[in-house]
Length: 188
Image 1 (tube, rainbow, N blue to C red):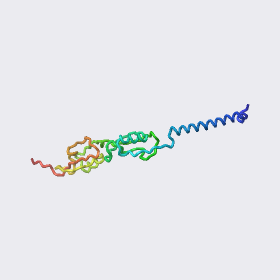
Image 2: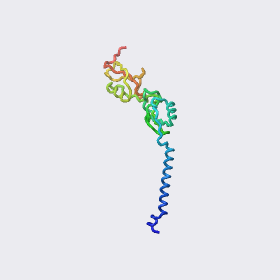
Image 3: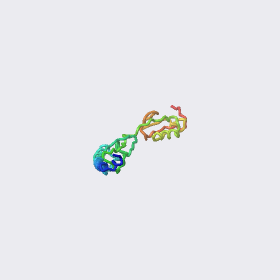
Image 4: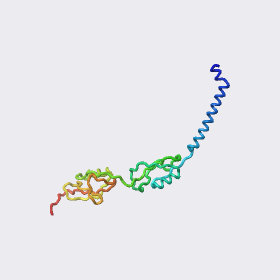
């Protein structure tokens, strides 16, 4: 039998029609199975978790069939309580599937600590930007007899003298003692 006769025979056409019908039925069944297993068209709204504690967040996410994933907690925000959520992704109100991971950034317990730079015997004009660049604040300024006018003589934190190399939390106020340009008097 030649190929042309076989391709135009009733047996071949029946086989092709049966294969097409089987392919359509299998495709339909697979699509129905996928709809039921992937919850096609079913979404959950992500709740607003900012400012909430971990216990509250866990309860809310469990109620909505969502999973929490905690990310890095380096950015301290004094407006939020310790260990509360300060950022989340996906954002509140987003539509997601069940069991979706919600990525959370928590507020750490406090500011990270930074090494105090050596600014003693530098001018106030040099010392102030150095401290501010590291995240410190310049607190009270007092003057003492020293020939170096506006030169940093000492640094104080909460009433105690500190030295370069010590670690203080960011945003700490460092009080400075500056020289007033007068020679020290040796009267005793």
